[in-house]
Length: 158
Image (cartoon, rainbow, N blue to C red):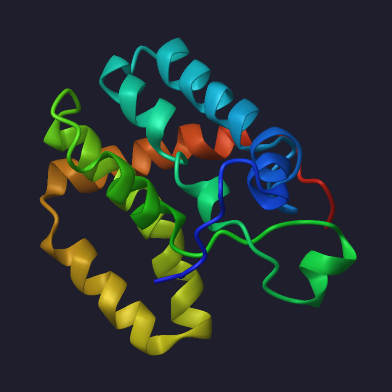
């Protein structure tokens, strides 16, 4: 897991929250989060309301410059942000276990596809997690990923 732990008033935290994520996101984390929430509610998927609001809560805490591309384009990487998001909310008694699972695993599908090409040990680990999830949760994660993608807006660049 990524060991970055930005402070709330750090540059990385504030810039990623309000302005810049990466080439896949048109907006910072806050606007992206609001867009994901909007698309889930617009589709009538009210059970995703809390997950949409919380799914990227950990991103600003783990924002870091991973490579030359991040520096060149003034962007951020967020490795294992979903686990950081889960760690923040896991003991909140007013959040359902279902929502905590959606938050924790919302990036799993994308992570499996990416790691299959780049990191086979990570792929095996993530695939094992996916296979252990029940079918209903897998379907919900696929639907949530659609809202997450809609929330990204236009790509910043190719």
